[in-house]
Amino acid sequence: MATAKKIQEFIGRSSWIRKMFEEGMVLAKQYGAENVFDFSLGNPNIPPPPELKQVIRELLDKNIPGMHDYGPNAGYPDTREAVAAFLRQEYDVDALTADHIIMTCGAGGALNVALKALLDPGDEVVIPVPYFVEYGFYTDNAGGVPKMVNTKEDFSLDLEAMAEAMTEKTKIVLINSPNNPTGKVYDEATIRGLAALLEAKSAEFKKDIYLLSDEPYREIVYDNVKVPSLLKNYKNSIIGSSYSKTLSIPGERIGFLAASPDMTDVEDVIAGLILCNRILGYVNAPVLMQRVVARLQGVRVNVAEYKRKRDLLCDGLAAFGYQFSRPEGAFYLFPKTPIPDDIEFVRALQQKRILAVPGTGFGAPGYFRLAYCVADETIIKALPGFEQVIKEIVS
Image (cartoon, rainbow, N blue to C red; front, side, top):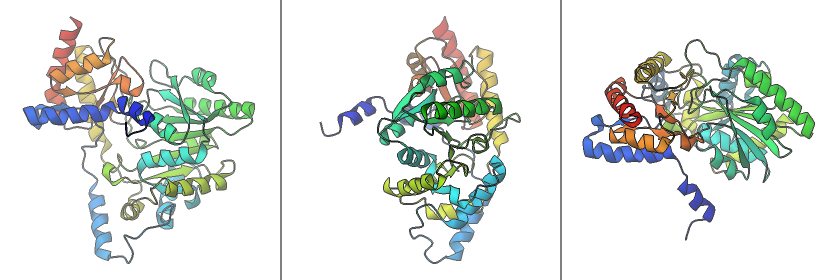
């Protein structure tokens, strides 16, 4: 066997999202793409804001010398300052500067850089369940050990369970809000409670425990929900984010890390983040997109369109008897499966040419994920199939 045993194991439990997406491509060839209702992949279907194309054209027309050369490992200073200026207001942290920002290859790159910089082999990363499917792999990449902890029925953090899971080996707590796959947003009281817990555990274990937050959906929230500021609430916090969802440019792989200016030994942590941004092979974030996003701080897609899609899907499924918590953010719905076997249920949906992802892939069997960042027509045409399946499988 050519590949490592561990990688063979990882392949065996690799992403259900990609698996369903690829099966959808097969169905599309067989039945026509318009007759396959693909809710598997969180690929934004809302076009980027018009400002994006305008800024790219202006930059290309300027023909800046060396515009496509390697840039600084942490990112261009003016881009980092533009990001910091926006985040100072967004997170209500006046001391945040360009020195606390590292431009990265998307949020995935940001998380890998942070984990690599902070973890020693065997260090534990506490991760609430359900979780984004790659978190366990990312943790392993850095030699860490993922430690999964269940959330409450409504997917809010179970702070008591998290406290019980923490040991002297705990180095990082990794959260994702708004959450993929549930759409849950952890409220201010929860974040303050988590911060108090981490401060208490840091004192108990006589070590710094870091709070790492994956926030690419921060600006996609509904119904006046607010995403609390981790940087303001906990001094040893780091934000990893991207412009994939807010600007609908996931393939451009542009994101950032923001470290709390109040962090213990913040200069050492920043130096570690910058080094890992290079030695992991990223070298630096895409330079053209750094220049682009520097001019688009605060610009976002029309979130009201995602809210409309959410309501269209939720209202339809609720009428058929599906049970779920209505998402507060992101663009995913995570209903309970009407039978215990979520994989069997997803296969039943597939028979109606509806592609969903079983909750097992997110560490939460008994649920399934629907990415509703799709055309309205896809939702509308899929609803009869959802109704048929729940009637057939429950009867």
